[in-house]
Image 1: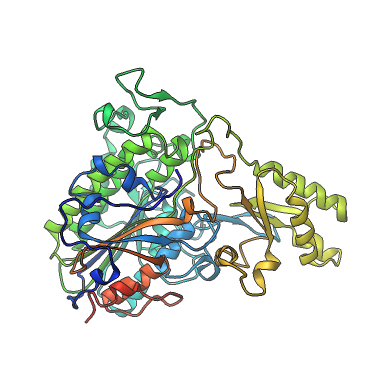
Image 2 (image 1 turned 60 degrees about the horizontal axis):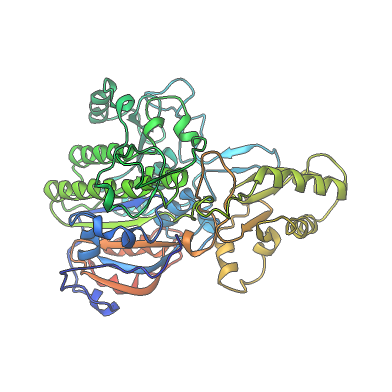
Amino acid sequence: MKSGKFILFLLGCTAAFRCSDALAAPAEPTPALVVNIVISGVPYDFFNRYEANLTDDGFRKFMREGAVFTESRYEYMPTNSASSLATLTTGTYPSVHGIVGSQWCDVLTGQTVSLIADPSATGFDCEYGEGCYSGAKLTTPTLGDRLRRDRPDSKVISIAADPVSAIVMAGLGTEAYWLNPRTACWTSSSDYMLYLPGWVTKFNEQYKNNTYFNNWFWTLSKAEERYRNDRVSCIQTESKGRFRQMEAIKALPSMSAKGRFPRVSATPLANDMVADFVRQAILQEGLGDDDTPDLLNICFDAPRYITAHYGPESVEAEDMFYHLDQTVASLIRFIEQETCGRVVYVLTTDHGCSDSYDAYSLKTERFNGTQFRTIINSFLCAQYGGESWVAGYAGRRLYINRNEAFNRNLSLDEVQRRASDFALQFRGIARVVPSCDLRSGAATDRYMQRLRNGYYQKRSGDLLVDLEPGLIEERTGVRASSGSAFEYDIHVPLMIMGCGIPAGISDEEVDMTSVAVTLARLLGISQPDASSALPIPVLIHTGTK
């Protein structure tokens, strides 16, 4: 599903105009609450493709009443959820905030490093040694950190099913909650609080004896004839001819892990669980009920798993979007009822995704990263001697064992360039860039600047591999993926609504680092410490005093 022009149908809307000037507005009071909603892994064109089946109070509400930006992009590579969420909340790219992914390789030890794993932290309501997560490896303050520093009475809460998503959005000093996969209960760690608040414990008690995790199954939310997609895998359908059954592939690791939650982690039920907890957080923490501004970060992770496993062309992906539309509509109605009304909503995604690798009969290849690592290692051994030249491979980054080069008194740059030249022989590789080219000199074009924006010297490795358009890596349970600098990965929807922000559509280019800076301006606080962007020009007069 390649991204075309993002055309939004604003039927019956007289307040929207197709020009940037339409978004300018007089100053409004500071928002009492900013709700940052991230739908993980949803392609750019979903809002247009499925618009006819959306509800009036969900995504259409953003499209009708919000400021809609049709040319918003994450200008970095390789795209992934952890990096994009950090970019969205810090106002800068991985080259500064250092989040290159959920894991990377230590080039000196060869060990895989987890972004959130921290043995010094204690997970609540977990088995011993499990759930030991923290933000200790985060290096850059977020918008929430800045809000708490400028306004100490403000509340900042980040909620996601995936602990990586929650922790990255929370930043260095705010609260994060995520789901314990074994119990399907909400949890956190000692890095954020001494113990779970009483309202969280009470909320979890409601789920402990529920059996719907075992009994839940996926059925269509609309009549079969209303669906655009026709490839189906697990949804039970009435007719045999309307949909084409997809070939089953192995489950994603997140779906096959032990516990109550993994079975439904890639279903609409996971989104509803997040929304239920968000409602309780708003109610129990009193978010948005006074003049002190609060911030609520929400990431719906299930869409990422669904588009990855079933593909964006699947009935599952389409139906998930309809379910989520209704979930968001219900959540907005709740927020409007329970807060003082001065709420700014942000709706966006962390990245898009490719077409399914098997969407077309002639295109069934995937790139084998394990094989690539093995062959590069053999090549370097043949060139320089030794047995273990490659320390690791993750997220399209290959890590060279620096000790092998240092012990032989070799130039690391030379080793990188030789490996890079050899790697270009691999089928499916469009470009291989050695890190020495990313560390020095000015970017020669926009593509190269994206690569540099995604490069963090301590964590990004030695070779960055860019695959041909549409080609993805071979991973368990994955039909579609992100990671490239192509439009289908970096071009994302962005809509901002509420608290005096006028409706309209702007086709001005928006760098996603501008979102945190813009929200800081709306909140009347300083921008995040490492932010490297300017606020979105057409909104800077809105909400400021």
